[in-house]
Amino acid sequence: GQQLNQSPQSMFIQEGEDVSMNCTSSSIFNTWLWYKQDPGEGPVLLIALYKAGELTSNGRLTAQFGITRKDSFLNISASIPSDVGIYFCAGQLSSGGSNYKLTFGKGTLLTVNP
Amino acid sequence: DADVTQTPRNRITKTGKRIMLECSQTKGHDRMYWYRQDPGLGLRLIYYSFDVKDINKGEISDGYSVSRQAQAKFSLSLESAIPNQTALYFCATSETGTADSYEQYFGPGTRLTVT
Image (cartoon, rainbow over all chains, first blue to last red; front, top):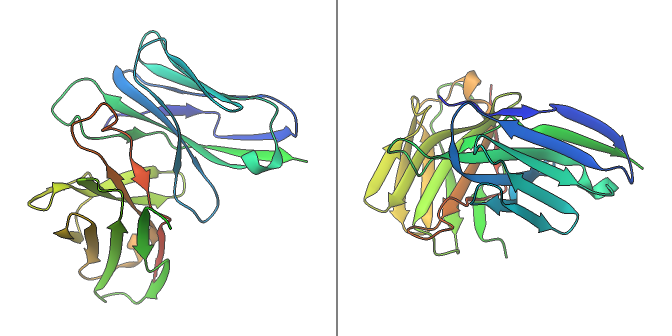
């Protein structure tokens, strides 16, 4: 199936630092979504992006839909301990009849050291 | 109250047993999904349903079956559990026919262990 390359796989940062992570693909996507998963819980939707070039913020989180429609970025500013978790990107492909489906990245594990 | 609930939250079962995982939602969404999550593999789609009469296989449906009892309820069954079905299982929902249709909302998950 389609692959989303999410990087980095893990990050260990100090509280207060900014964080960047991204997802890339060889395919074009119509929609990009960013989720966060806390330990023992289900993924929670953070940001949804629907237009190439779109930049959307949700508090300290900012995500961008890449101009090429093949990538997306998530930035977290001034990290705090509760930012710890796994961050997933998900995309909806522009081609094919399976437009219901989301393709998920494998996640970025974020650890914040107080 | 949570919009998407799953029961049980944890389950340990033996090889060969039949088990059912249940999902209920109060979001009023038509579309429901079952995923499994394994370390390093991300989320993989098992089955999805666009409405009560529309059920479709996902990428890893072998060994699983589903039932959509109502708009709000979608159950996943393992007919004869095997150890490599040990995983986290998530139910998700989404709307139909809107610009936000691709936004999926997840339940809290069921941790299943097959011994």
